[in-house]
Image (tube, rainbow, N blue to C red; front, side, top):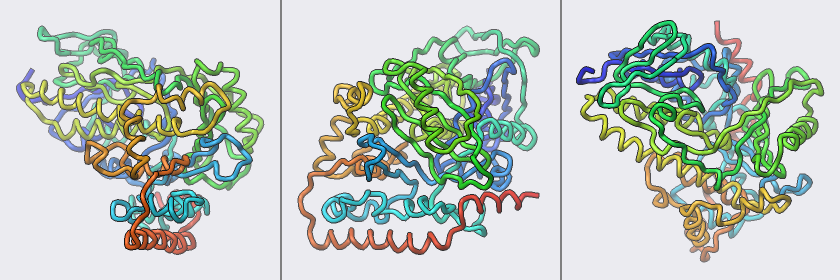
Length: 510
């Protein structure tokens, strides 16, 4: 192996593999990037939600937003809406809250949570501190027709067809960024005397050598899990869901409004996602096999589809099983795992693709490197991403821990503090006394910042036991509430409908 890394081999296609390959090729044109994917291994293809960071990722690799919208059945995601997570009563008012992508007006500058609890606690927190809820409820797009690509009025991410996204990335990476694609089945792993991977032995192309190998082989974790034997650190004791039933359903009528956010609806033994694309909805039931069998989950999914107006004739959902958890290490020798090969918890809050982006960006920052530095880079990478995974788990568990639902063992177990991570238990004690602050989190680039905790905590009905605010602090917070209200009154009438923006971008591509 040469002293400085010159070649990278990515094992596995799909959204993760091609995103990693494209970012590496765009950031490091001096490297030789090869992606190997087998036509015998199916792609899961149900990750249809992203974070706003995807806009920067697409810009970095040189994709046109309008072309992306047209080719990948894209809609614009402004956050997530949570239905029936608090009490589970479909008829009860207030059992709904938003986690928008826009920061609260005045976040970090005023005591928003304390002032909200003291003066407007009867209204949902997000409704008071951000114009996003009003924009979403009105069915508006996050920007105007003339707004430049990737620009925004309201912060946004995307929903898209994962299969089409993988195809577009493949075409872009191979035709414009110089990534070499090899379609072949890997039959073995060849090792160096020091334990590094020397090459992947393929059925039709022989041994494919590289300096660095990126494992994007999905849940199989062909290199990190199977070859290096790095075990999965199960999180089943914290987050119980380990199966999903996804299905794609058409709209009941042409021109049906497209949802502006991911809708997550809780049921007695799990929850159901609902993602609106221009021509269909992607819907799926997430559940714990320890608390519900497949028939119960299918019944819950079909009941939801019937209640939300899905056509009676629809494809049968397919069962996906997984073990919620993440690898004890992500980088071993000259191999780093990204995507499902490194772990998977559950679809809630769309953290999977965000972790792919973060991992790929970190890898880009470390390259090129001499082989002698790799052990240090690997140790730091492992430390950083072990921290990130733990914080993701804390945040996802928060959605369940604060629920008041008492309609099944599933929810009662989630509410039991013995199933909460220690860091979350300690934080909730502190957050009774004050709202989450930036210094509660160890990194400047947290996966979920303090603002996200505010939205979920107070959306779920959590209330801080704070001391009365001074008149000056109360006035400062009220000024922020007033500004959020003014923004909503200005934005809603000035923004096009969500479908109108999508149709405009479809027409704008030659």
